[in-house]
Image 1 (cartoon, each protein chain N blue to C red):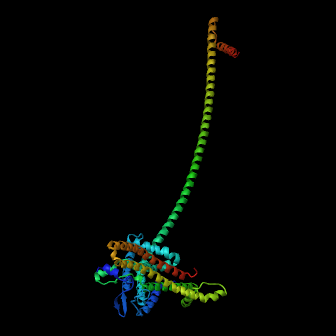
Image 2 (image 1 turned 30 degrees about the vertical axis):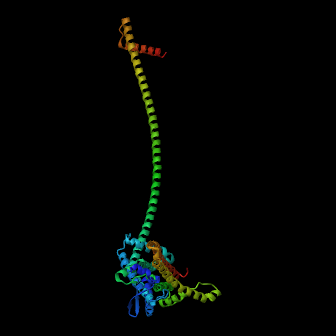
Image 3 (image 1 turned 180 degrees about the vertical axis):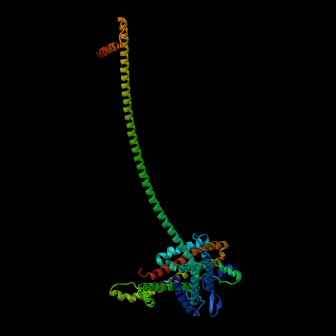
Length: 197
Length: 285
């Protein structure tokens, strides 16, 4: 247990009061010598001072001291809180900066990947286009070849028929259908052979 | 004869010596005692009014007093008393302001006013220019220093698990034992008693010095001012201006010095009391 300052002052006050009363018992006073101590006046000073200490401590200085201590605590707490907040904000700032750096790196990677994909796609589309164009060209060539062959064949058939008709007219002899057919076949065969040669 | 002539014509010592106002039974009530009461009443009017509803941020008059109080607390008391500061600060504030109020009240020309109003001089005065008053204050400081030291030793003993009665007795003994610097070995034992006597003389001299310093400073300033005024009628033959100009300028300059001394002496008394209390409550220093 600790004695409070109030108790300390009470002890002092008691001692001073006892001393004061002892001093006051001395009837000596009112001196013309400036360095002579009048015990009654000294005792009175002690008494006034002790009363002041007790009253002012209770009604003025302790409340003021409490207010000052409260303000000091408030300032200390505010400073500590500000320090904590600053550390927290610095931590958050670092965290967000790291996140931004990471996001930027990720974005760059995504863009790079997209570019690569787009390039690959472009190349694929180009190659597919080329292949398809080649296939279409090939098909067209084949179809042209077939059409050409068919047309040539029809031309041969028609020419043979005309030749046969002309020859028949020339020799005034009607050919029966079977001979007519055989003659055309022979003509065609000769024509094709001639064409191959 | 004007009141100024009356003052000037008087013996300079008349202004600083206590004067009986009336009898209080077998004892005399002096002007210094009246000033003590006046300053006490002023303090009782001012400080509780300031303290009422003390805000977190002070304004106006509170700033004036708080600046002084904080100075005493953080610059004067704390370096000497450390964690004991707030325990002693109401005492130290009272001590400082009591001396300051008395010093400053002594500078206000209340006495000539009283002379004008009541037709009776030496009603007011500077209480701290009286050795009896400063001796009383030094006695309070003396008691405070040693009681604090003994109580601190009591706490120390209690902290070591001793019962209150043993702690009180041991606290008292240990306080005086710690008065002497601890020298190891036989030489320490040999020197203990002479050193104790020396330290006890030192303990008695400290409050004596406190009392004399405050008294002498406050008295000297007033004597110088009064002497200047005494010189004035003596030099009347030089002409009014030749007297008035140096006297007024000299009084004004010395008044400024006195104002400074009023604060300085209150500060020194409080500062030294702090140092002595600090040494008493922390004997290891």
